[in-house]
Length: 294
Image 1 (cartoon, rainbow, N blue to C red):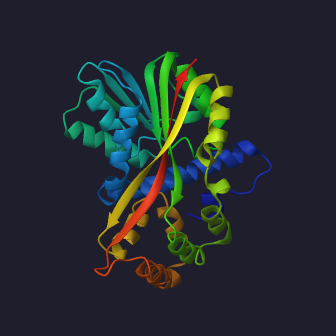
Image 2: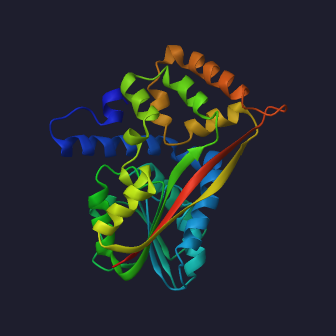
């Protein structure tokens, strides 16, 4: 994938740029789908379970998981709603959808469905769900207003919406990313460096998120942060987690002749953060936001 394809590409037509951005996100996560859960499930799965609990899901609820990935929220929500409930996962990345659908089928789950769909134009009838959840997904959509309007439409009155966003990292964890940025094409480096470029208003701050939610017709907006601690047994494990995550496409944009050099530069920075045994512990604040459909 080229730099222009990943970034969305300059375009006089915002709709074209947004479409390219979605294609790039879908491509990157599809590349990582098979390795994603093994490398990153230890981080994402507890967050998904916490979000499902905060949403106050009840037995028998119909739940939509937007940006379901490998099921961090999907399977946690299913445990909350029980055999009389129903959970649908949607994702732009067909690779994620195939892998998660196969996992659900392998577990013999009959009240789960996974399909490709777009948060900004959900293909469900009005008032289809009692709850909608999205862990680290709606914060990336190019048009968060359209996404919230779509979510509001498919929820029943009083339905619950919850999502997660990244807060601050522990000091020092910006250095490995900065080392990697030096090897990326300029537009990708700017995307990684800038919070405003990576996330929409839902992901940037609780104040911006609350404003968007209220304007979309949601009420009782509540946000709080809770720390997530990730343990990497080695610097190599951190590198593998990046390759198995949403930045897979960005790493593949590094010229092949410089990839080993980039890896060495990143590992040198990680060594400064490591414990004497070479392991790493990364502490990240996670913002949980919930709201009710007015």
